[in-house]
Length: 413
Image (tube, rainbow, N blue to C red; front, side, top):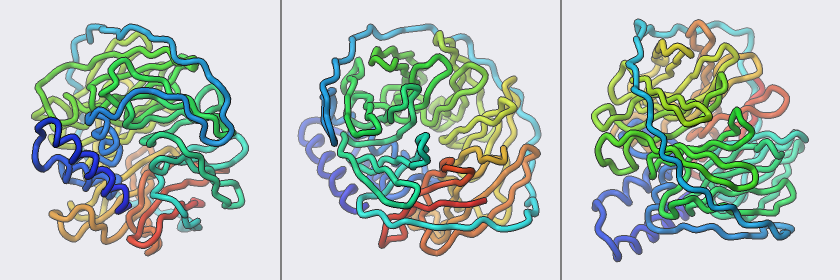
């Protein structure tokens, strides 16, 4: 992790030699890289990678990570410029405080120590292998725990595409595609200085992604044709405008979090149709800092907030839940839907709000459809727990960094 921070700061220094920038911005980005989330108004690790894109590290190339084969370049597609529909104000419901739900048994945990850098989010391939991004590599963890790495451009987020390949975002101003055999292709974005953040397979067979630095929602077909949909401009801020972050799919639309502060026009959940029509729902809590999103079977969108969990129904009704038994110095660092239909999440606690990167403990949490939350302490070696993802066979997986080693954890609920 320290090497990644050093590389980022070096890249920022080069940029500072060419153009002015806020003096504390590199430090703020480096702090985001050190941990997936914090309760401060900083950008997450994903934004750290996206911020590097602003330095001009862009363009697409054809790479061969393992066994390369020629792939045709992407077809250029004009940038779409739809006009968003008027944004209605969601009617918030009373904000309850969730109470713990008893469970028969606590989850069990196992881990594998990584030889490379810290892992990001994870996806499961049809063969049960777990794939994850780790800096400039994508890792594959076989069902038996063996790790194989493939060299790629820097990775922010990965997803399993409709074509069975791994698609990923990064700070290089392009969208990447890697076959399960390791052959990599990059498709450039229309604006090279911009970079994508999160990515998901959409309802129309294309991949949809957020552009935090460019203030856009993007769409790319499996053949590489890119379309971009600009989001409302509500005043200049460091990461864009409303800073779109996590993205998911529900009810034939894509849903995403707008993570910028309320004062800067963020703190909303956005919904976009495949045709680009936009609706935004303001959150009841100011400075909620939504980021990660996940959709449940009833069509609800669950999202992480700075110190809790939120839910929005398809009609726009919003509820927010605080995590019981936790102080304000707790950050939610990822959430996903488990095989039991409940939403599971990881969170980290901090003794000193002024030192958000120094985690003092990590928890695993579960929230059911009624809003009841149960939390479980994670093993000491899992401190600094990162993005939680759905694993193979009903398990959950997440990365961690305890200050000594990077690990991938498998949880059996």
